[in-house]
Amino acid sequence: MSLKLKAVVLCCVVSGVLMAAQVIAADTAVEKTSPFDPAADKVLRAADAYISSQKSLAMKAETLLDIVTDEGEILTYTTQVDVSIERPDKLYAKRVGIIRNQEIFYNGSELVLHSLQHHVFAREQVPPTIDKMMDFAMTELGLQAPGRDLLYTNLYDGMMSDAVSGTFLGKVMVDGVECNHLAYRGNEVDFQLWIEAGKEAKPKRFMIVSKLLPSAPRYMINIRSLEPTKFAKETFEFSPSAEDKQIQFLTQEEIAQLKQAVKESK
Image 1 (cartoon, rainbow, N blue to C red):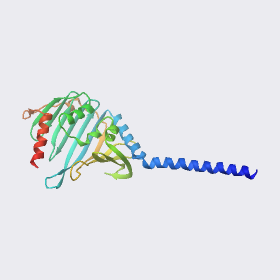
Image 2: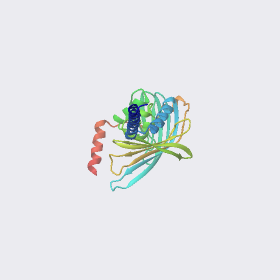
Image 3: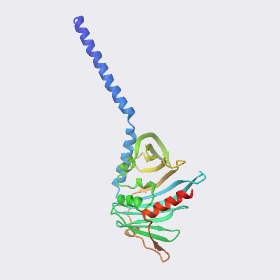
Image 4: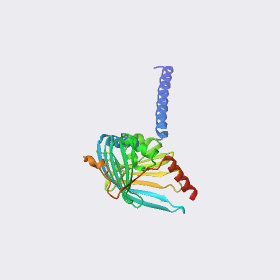
């Protein structure tokens, strides 16, 4: 082989190596600059697949909610929660604690909020699916349920609607169960998820941190059990007792007036 030909071959080899290095570097740069960790996305999609595949679920959990006082003190209140779901249009929830002591009944057409402490209840005609009912209850009735994202048929889309980045933090133990720990940042809230690492990717813990409120209060739900269950029809029907009295849900105007009054009182 002549020296001239050798030089040409060497030039081609070097060019090829440099081109391959540039491609690898570009791929690495894209991977590093992506705000969503593929490992976190895979785990979250697995949890979504598990939740969406279940036609009925019984959940027992404990929630922790931070309340910030006017003096800036953070008080954390716990609530025991029982939830029964039969998709697409049945839900029962019971929340018992210091600041919440109530039941929610949804039978596919009507939502009932029942105060166990004050023996009053309110009824409202609502949309015919659990997902649409929860949206309606939040926007039209002013009902707040920070952990509702775990109940939607499409858990993944609900969780990712405000997310701007996501990270897989590793495997940890939660109540004796190995879980994948995920952390997401959003525009309005940051949240973390602990999802079981076994064959069934069940959510085990969910925590939200508000970025819009002073002192960044947290909401956390620790799920003690989440299992497929068959329910009796009456589970989702409300039957008032003799001492229960019916009241009306507040209108949007009344809710706005109440919020303004609270704001002005501070």
